[in-house]
Image (cartoon, rainbow, N blue to C red; front, side, top):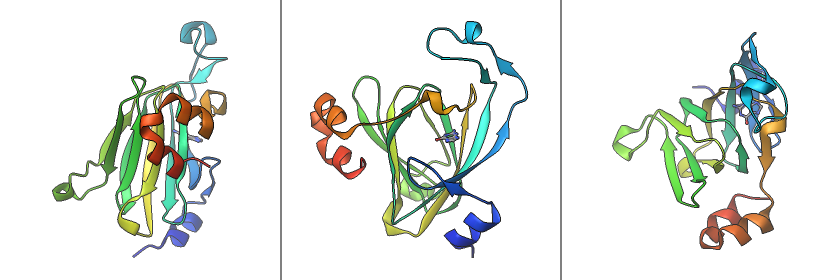
Length: 166
Ligand code: GUN
């Protein structure tokens, strides 16, 4: 069975600023112009892009948001718990994995503009997933949450914000 270290080495993953390890696996050659994308985007973007994302149980992916809808696909290891605070302030946690009897789903979409964070389920060693976005990912569309601001905006979700921000 693969360990997290085997996967990091084999897939040549690098540390991600939100926590965990990743590698971009695909980026469309075509792009969408800023005028077609509209006010939300600061410049042109690729049609789409995809990454591998590996999270280990000694870390977490901190609350952040991006403009695009993001499709998650489970590949290996334990289920990953994806915590979402949507644009209406509603909190949910989805187990992305293949343990269907535990209510896990192999594919999940985080809607653009939602705050989200993730952690490996059940103290397991790691989760490996794929994350695909369209328009393609750009760090200009990525915002790491500021803990005090998130708490002030969503005091009802204090516990999960304290646990999954730095
Ligand atoms: N490329 C670099 N970081 C990310 C990310 O967090 N999500 C996606 N989909 N692509 C990325």
